[in-house]
Image 1 (cartoon, rainbow, N blue to C red):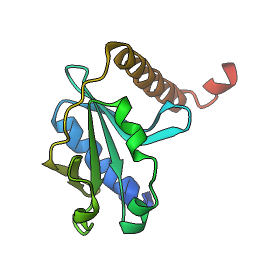
Image 2 (image 1 turned 90 degrees about the horizontal axis):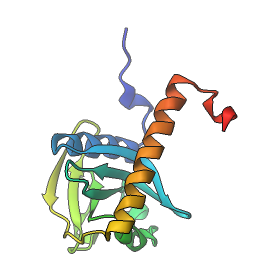
Image 3 (image 1 turned 90 degrees about the vertical axis):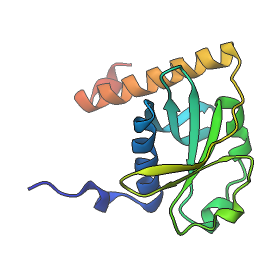
Length: 151
């Protein structure tokens, strides 16, 4: 008997899962909880078919959003920035010059496209390497939980 994996997820994780599924529909792959630089952890980073990089920051409620003081620091690491929230979130709190995704544990929809600010080629290269390395290490960790012992 297969269990519903959503039972084990926190509200922000459910939103992240729906946002990642939505990104997949646009031809993106994604990595959750990616660290582009020391001291920065983004909820979802999407890599598009033309190497575009989108960051999606997931918020489960008003207090979660209001306590986030570092999100503007994420803008320099992506081509587009989005908030992902559930349908009950007070979206009037979110800055209008950012993207907006409404998501749940199963899917998401872009309500407002984030403005495009193209990354510099050198920054894009770093982000592509970070994305690939993070994804590869996580996959290796699934196949070989002791792999980290050999680094």
